[in-house]
Length: 240
Image 1 (tube, rainbow, N blue to C red):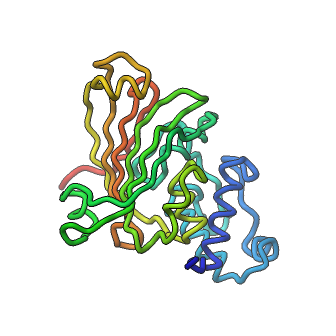
Image 2: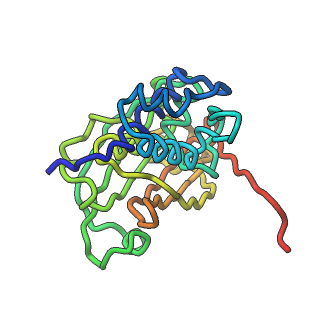
């Protein structure tokens, strides 16, 4: 059964896409609220909800008396906003694609079930793929998704590149928060073969739990060629 997507999510997805494709360039001011209402044929409440999500995602800054500015979300994956690997690479000008995507149902490791607040032996959706940038492999990705949120996703293999965008556009899921744990490792033989790099090359390993309004919905384990990617973290203040 297809889920009904709220109007504000449809507007959020459309405006986000217009920011990513430079219809609304970085540093520019967004149209006014009445203009957006007219453009998308929706109410002010719908526009405000969509803009709140865009601001939470780090795409815009709403400033009273000045307007709404499109922020620079590019260059590195910023860990203070919930951006995907694919979105980050696309914002840097890379053409991103997926290779050998496989979607199935599995009982994941216990720590994944714990992170998703699911009982032991629960099956979840597993999505495995190799991400390519300009045709070259840069990351191995394994996503575990709560199944009741994504009915029919087993038939979606090969139909999307960015899982986050797919969750937003097809299932109307609002991605609000994420918790990342990042470490380094040396590529083993299989990883080096899949990524086409020498055995022992440095990899970044990012294990992320993604939340929708307080509920954990996905765990992703991403192994990235460290020579082709970086993360940034914005820190504020000192402990008292």
